[in-house]
Image 1 (cartoon, protein in one colour):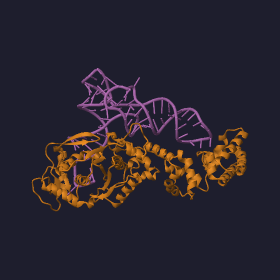
Image 2 (cartoon, rainbow, N blue to C red):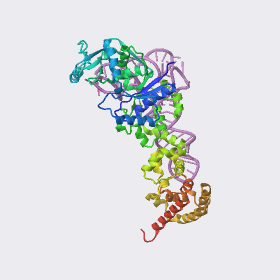
Image 3 (cartoon, rainbow, N blue to C red):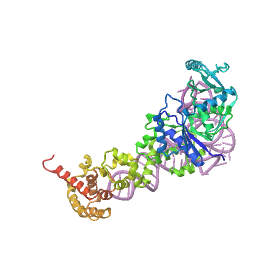
Amino acid sequence: MEPVITRFPPSPTGRLHIGGARTALFNWLFARNRGGRFILRIEDTDVERSTEESVKAILEGLEWLELTWDEGPYFQTQRLDLYVEYANKLIDSGRGYWCECSPEDLDIRRSAAMAEGRKPKYEGTCRLKGLGPGSNRVLRFRSPDAGTTLLRDIIKGPIEYDNSELDDLVILKSDGMPTYNFAVVVDDITMGVTHVIRGDDHVNNTPRQILIYEALGAKLPEFGHVPMIHGDDRSPLSKRHGATSVMEYKKMGFLPEALTNCLARLGWSYGDQEIFSRTELIEKFSLENVGKSPSIFTMEKLLWLNAHYIKEKRPEDLVAPLKPFLSQRGYPDKSDAYIAGAIRTLQARSHTLVEMADAMRFYMADEIEFDPDAAREFLTADIAGALGRLIFEVSELEPFDEKGLEPVFRNIAADLGVKLGKIAQPVRVALTGTTKSPGLFEIIELLGKQTVLKRLQKGLKHIEERHSPDSV
RNA sequence: GGUCCCAUCGUCUAGCGGCCCAGGAUAUCGGCCUCUCACGCCGAAGACACGGGUUCGAACCCCGUUGGGACUACCA
């Protein structure tokens, strides 16, 4: 069997967005699954809108998702000779001709046709003029007037088009640049692409492209059109639906494996399985299991998957990805081991690295603030005695660890005839400033005796000040 | 307007004529666990867009309707 070659051809006019990332992922997975090659090609023939910054942003996104390419990035603007060469082949075989119609003129004729209820297609005005190249002239592809073109789509099945629906499309613009439909074909032919896996929005371009393949006498690749991804109102995904670019998800504290897993399951499925490791994805991916209907992208599943991967990772492996979020919050530096320890207690409680970094404040900051509501409810006079005894016993405790801590608390609670929660909550507020946190004993051990005693004393002081006669 | 595509719980989906009065996941709600919050576990509610066919039998096949989407550029 001939080796599989797939490609991802973004146009550098923006960031790598969710839809593009999924297309890239599918191409990458398909190539990896079949032991083939994956090519990255930058389609920058729209010189007006293409930017180098976008190229960088797209590469950055692909790299973050670890969608490594085997060839490229190729740039279409560096392959212009090739398009001219293939255009000449078309001219020589009578399938290409120069056209002098001005865009303005065409516009007028198009809207006139629309207004009269006719098809707004190019009428072939310059077909027989026998024009040569010249300024303000474009090269058009001579499309057949009759017959049909069949697209055998791996995902959607066979689709037949009447050639009469297709008009003579421009293949070389007046600035000498090739148009999309022509450049793709030339590139895919010359790069040996065997499988064109792309978004649904290209289905209707495909018959035109097939016609060009045929006119060039080239072998057709396999086509697979994956359904679009929409926003929650079923309209195309756009900024108003929230984050659309892949790197925004990194900033929101998502792990690349979570996004990858999520994207893979948008449109593709493997029975009832939801969680896929990278190798599993490569192993199990196939175009046969790609669905036909468009899907809506929401963050619900992504959040769940992200929580799953955060939970699953070794704490020490989370340190590096978490650090940017910690320094972003201005926390003082701590050792990696300490951070890893904090992560361990927060893993099951965090959906994103942002959440985790926020929750980590009491571990990192030197001073903590008491949440007013929490302090009012739990830092009350009736537990001052217990707190005092706790401070004493904790200061005496050696070794200072979870195992030794728990009995201390339980004994005090038992002596007072109350449940553990009765003293646990005030202590929690004193240590973390809030009523929600990881397990008390693991917090205490990690924080260390000195910090714990300091915060407990501060808690006690808060109670005393609150209840002293001269305060209200 | 024309051409093309799509249609199962709110969402992602399984289903490829009988295993389905439709399964999983997520989200929601309830319970359990418990030092709080989570996690985890258990449970509840929740869908075959509609109308016609075909067939002994249809979520699955056909036609139509409706609703979405794509394309219709010297954008890609």
